[in-house]
Length: 457
Ligand SMILES: Cc1cc2nc3c(=O)[nH]c(=O)nc-3n(C[C@H](O)[C@H](O)[C@H](O)COP(=O)(O)OP(=O)(O)OC[C@H]3O[C@@H](n4cnc5c(N)ncnc54)[C@H](O)[C@@H]3O)c2cc1C
Image 1: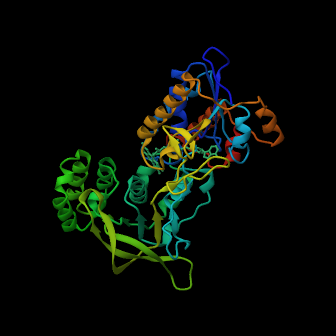
Image 2: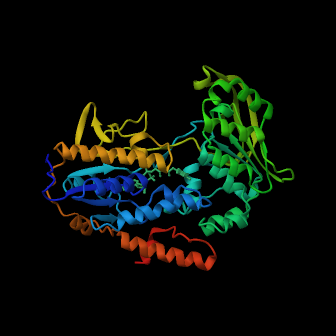
Image 3: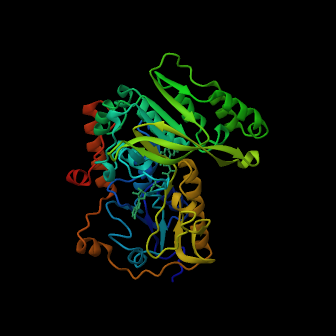
């Protein structure tokens, strides 16, 4: 273990993961502890995590944070090493031989499952796969979904990601063409026959996780009608008035759901379906192909602010050809670091990683890995700033850090034939993406295969 002094050599920090959590921690730290040197690693040659591969293509304004991240990367005290997977190409142990501290901010790369029979049938996929596919994540380029032989899709889950998916499935293709959605996704979506999307949740309208902005957008897609059991919505809103009246965002959301959609003539629809828990995926006869979904019908029990869905023992089936599950992302453990698999996060106190009750010297976490896979970019920023402040406090208080031996990572890269991608390299890749996009009349056309990205360099 070592102790860092303000006047000595710079504090060397390794950041694992280049999403908002990694960048915002770097941003704050470079300001608050100027004698810092940061090396940021990402498994992909492209930085920015879910800002590139999660945020919907028709939400370009959300992606403006990339320019804040660019400014961080322009700092002389910052270096980017893309195309390097920590835990595979380089271990955490090897990193600890090189840095005074390590920040783990590698997000959530796995899915929560429904754990019901038939979940592996062709036509069922997770939100992560579908979103990664339309956003050009190299792991999902070859993903397939039979959108051309069904008119009905079910999205399980009632959060904003579920609405992103419903919107992408129902938005007129010419609107999507103007976004940075991948060309192959456009081609598949242009052949899609899906006209009806059911967005399904276990509980009622008052318990949904959508936010008003997304619901408003969903309600105003041209040619798309909103369906729901409006009597049930009104009844639930009336019964829950005591909590709705104290919560302005919830009040706004409820009034949107109650008002419904202005579209009168529509050949497409989205349905908010409440009180349904999927229990089985139904298959076509003699085919490993989705034919429908079976739900158990629920009722709500418990106090208004903590309503639980209780199965009634009654069931219902619905025909559909595609089922997309949007029930949550999940972080994965990394070798040598404690992991709370029940909560799906690294145990920590204000970002300092804990082993039981003990603090691990020089080990920190931020973002979805720190607090679980929920929250938007702004909440990730707040949380990253909290971790950066913890690091600064530890430095000010002379808390022990790691004890780097000064090993040479460059040697390891050479020995293991790893080709790290610098931020300058990334800007060349990005320039090529902008150029391809310009030819197609869209903001950018993403490279979706790692070899194509590296071929630019
Ligand atoms: C589909 C979707 C849509 C969203 N839309 C919005 C939106 O419109 N507005 C909004 O505010 N928020 C949105 N969010 C939330 C937002 O994306 C998150 O709050 C934020 O990205 C979390 O940041 P993070 O840095 O913790 O994780 P991530 O953004 O996931 O970044 C993690 C990074 O770590 C890298 N990595 C993973 N494993 C390793 C490893 N072993 N070694 C090296 N690198 C690794 C990954 O490649 C990735 O770049 C959305 C989320 C999703 C899933």
